Image (cartoon, rainbow, N blue to C red; front, side):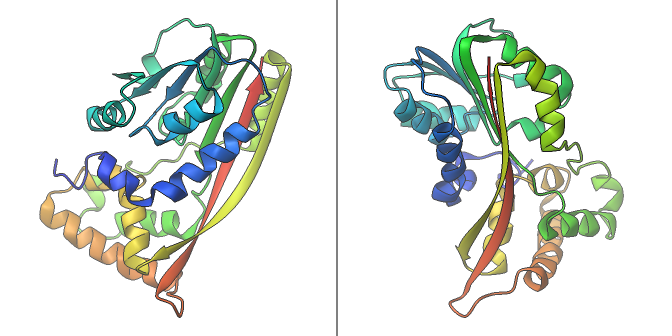
Length: 258
């Protein structure tokens, strides 16, 4: 695997402001309560943990991520908190937690019908599970990603690389409401102006959706794939007069309070 395909903190944080805004919006909707113990699932390089710490000053905070590179960056950024390399699907800490944050990570974890109720069970009474996930599989960037993957010399290697599991807001509400005193679900479409045209859109997705595809290709294959993908992206996301491109990005938010 080349450096391009690893879930690297440096690549992810090329767009730190844009990637951090949704977690600020998410935490702003969490009911006010005394948060003494909190966990940041999929903490990445610590930007979401930093936002969590500002929301809950004085709380004991634990961050988890499956990437050692991300955890190293988080530890350097926030040495006062505990960070560990861990897989959310097998995370077995019992809690109880006053706040469980999962920002832009659960889309990578399967079995939501089992996972989210299990996370709610780790909450203290009155505690909240705060989740934000990209909801963009119908957007041109993902549609083109599937098309490019299916029509090229790499098609066989890339079969099954696309993330396909997706549920609606009402599905999550029906799943969580019997377990919680309050469930708040909403969807927001952000429109991010990115300097650099189509190349900037490709750089954005290198830190997320492109990663499983690139991981299956060698260096030459990666370059060819990215060139084809960027050509199609340029048609779908036209460059504006100032040289930037406007990237619409839908996200689904859930705050489930026990």
